[in-house]
Image 1 (cartoon, rainbow, N blue to C red):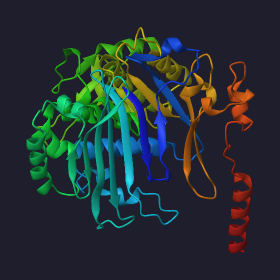
Image 2: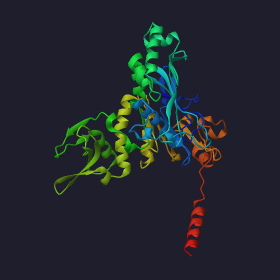
Image 3: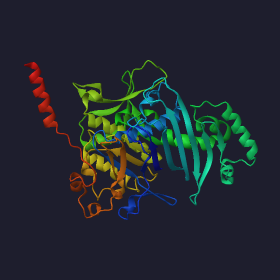
Image 4: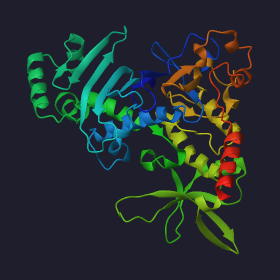
Length: 443
């Protein structure tokens, strides 16, 4: 369960910025909150902002952290994100500060904070990369932050708190530190201590809790259709021999009938790949014509909104069962607002969302600024300063004015610019000038 995600010197976010899912003191809609111990946590949030304001960079930040932990390194790999880290620092003020990510979350009824800061040479693909800082902390029930390890550029130290050693299951602290020193001596400056030495030599159990949360429980995806199937447990109700085989999902069938997609059957077919050990699946539609069945890729026959929604439905079922976090860029693209509202309502209903699943997505549609649907602390804004090019993130609940009272029309106030700068481009003037210039060149 995500509490806070902070990032700094990443893309348009120069200063430390925190996406908080910790509920404010607002009393309305308290029934929808996720409650874990003494935590009151938001099940969903929406990010609004103009084009190029930096909304997508919030998703990209989490995606980058997830890939770094999954790979165990900041070195260049075949992973697209890790191969282009030199493009991610904020570059508009000439700073050479490290990129930093910090994730605070609850897993297995334990609260952790994991932080990593690393340095790359902006725009230099062959430049030097090194981890400046890596810290893992445990937050006790009385809110005391206990350092489990602190890794700097030159050293790795375990926390000197008695609670840290007890949590890790060690009593001989000197022997443990000697073990850490041996690991540190042979450690590459681009390798994560969490994934390497800490997991191997100190505590595999604790390391796996952190690693699995960041790489499995968190779904930071820029596009619904790009979500990988490797995190899904399929539940086929039968297979149909067709030369190939097909998974017919009861969930697809129920959605198709409820949404009146048509008489066709939509299922999953294996794709042809050059790797016989890898199974890739794609949506396929079955049409009956002239007494025969034709199997066609759904991308050729169904609307983009239909395929996006069906892809998401599989993951939604798994998220609710396992308490996953979805962080999605423009989730409502090609999906009807009423369906998106229904998805939000599911996450905000504790009788359905029993395992604390969370949903965060970016949107341009103000229809979700509905006080009957969401709390003020669930409506977030990203804005870029036109002079410094720095992005900032804030919540509707941060405003202490009359314009955010529960009797206010949030949508109307939004379009009046009361919650931040609205995008304005004199597109008519730009195009008119461009066409006139083109005509002059032609003459």
